[in-house]
Length: 335
Ligand code: TRP
Image 1 (cartoon, rainbow, N blue to C red):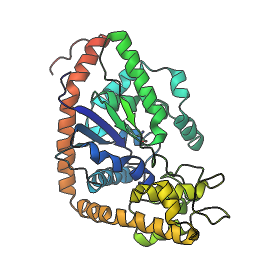
Image 2: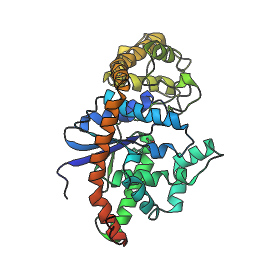
Image 3: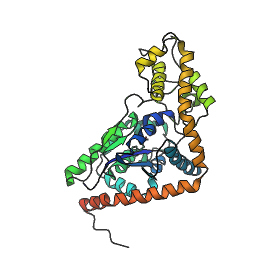
Image 4: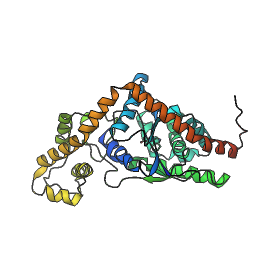
């Protein structure tokens, strides 16, 4: 292996304003790998166009997602921060892997089923092959570890299957990646319907807390969060709402579920919800300040994008040329 460090890759779509689910489930975990791994954190704009986007908005959100990466503590000197469409290897490998992925496998993806139900008028081929492009993202960098939210587990399994299949046919080509799915905060649920995942595209704004929501909005949303007819802050049957708030509180404070049950013993939901809101807002305020500072400096963001793309593109060359040779393409002429 030519790598001197193990590799981490993850991606975030610039398709909506990110929620605390995205933050706790994925982005907040990215930083801890920066010292020991070669880290690629990608803004996956090519994935975003699997559902119809407003072009100006997509462009703005691409900048925002990059700024948010940095505001959450990812230093561009220690991580390769880049935009997917700037590195052509993603599309190239994506196509090749399409030819090693079965129709039936893609049809079983629950995210495809959900999204095609939601976008019945635009069930395009890209929506179907979305997981193959994601596999390409990962395999292109010989990735060892992929930090993602629990909802991406099935896609990750597929990426592993594709890697093993390709290796089985052609001999060792790709590292078979492992997922890194945080235990406690992996799945943040909707504040309005706590059996449903918190989704950045939810139409009910009260169901979602966004990373960029102002403090008063955060406090209000938690205050309105659905709980149950009881009054005890503890886990249990029919207490999905409370349990969700507990895991959010746990993720923002580092306290365990047992500690939280003790802390709020006999204190009721009002107190508890206020505490969850405060903990969340305290964590997000400095991130928001840094985000605003970065968004005001577009030239700097463009410099980071360019440098990231240059590094990432360079790092794909070896794998791409290996893959081309293995599948039987003739050598790329210089032109
Ligand atoms: N599908 C991921 C999501 O929606 C985003 C993503 C695209 C990704 N490519 C990736 C995540 C590669 C990890 C690795 O959250």
